[in-house]
Length: 279
Ligand SMILES: NC(=O)c1ccc[n+]([C@@H]2O[C@H](COP(=O)([O-])OP(=O)(O)OC[C@H]3O[C@@H](n4cnc5c(N)ncnc54)[C@H](OP(=O)(O)O)[C@@H]3O)[C@@H](O)[C@H]2O)c1
Image (cartoon, rainbow, N blue to C red; front, side):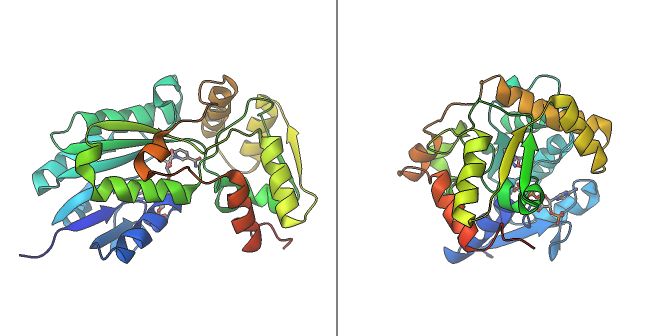
């Protein structure tokens, strides 16, 4: 009989790429899937899901940014004989209120918790890698980041730690069944402190400025986001400013058996790779 495989959704993204690479190095069979991967998976094309789910033992699920599809996906996974699901969610998913982020994360969590499969939920803090691989990157390369975030610190999590934890949970599932882990970095920093560290590590005079929610929404709509999406992104900062998710957790240490990496280590690694060099 063919050995069952580990399905990684969002396989070209920040977490999925790293998880797939780690699984491959363990000689664990991997099926890396997304819209642009060789194995195609699209949340908006349920007809294609059964092929992707064939012969899968454990699936890492990066949910879509809309509520709903994970319920049907879980049903298909059950029918396909998948044994376990590991879901990526966000810190404080219960506290997000009626924002689109809150709705999609809660919907995905409900789908996974309600399944007959083994499951684990990984609720991550803001990623350190947002500064070099996502939304904060372009403004930093241009020299200045402006966000509606002030004195409330954020315990940025290193995505390499998150990926290591996801792989541990995927490969040692019995220890983690039915667990919801809140995963943060080891210290909380303000955005100004994070940008200061990046500025020093990269040797560039980068600045950080706090702006109002309305200014931020205008800047996002100016970059092409709809008003609705811009308000949802702003809602994430409102939750952070409330202080509800500002504290560190021991989730990564309890999964990995070691302290999580610091933001300084991340900044050194990314600066050495030239992430914030002037273009
Ligand atoms: N950034 C943060 O600070 C943070 C913190 C906590 C939780 N999260 C959660 O993390 C998730 C994002 O994970 P990530 O950062 O690893 O990914 P990412 O870097 O944002 O990349 C998105 C991944 O999803 C795939 N994808 C996009 N649309 C798709 C679709 N319609 N069907 C199938 N695949 C699709 C993309 O690949 P293709 O383009 O090839 O399809 C890509 O692999 C979100 O749910 C977010 O809420 C983020």
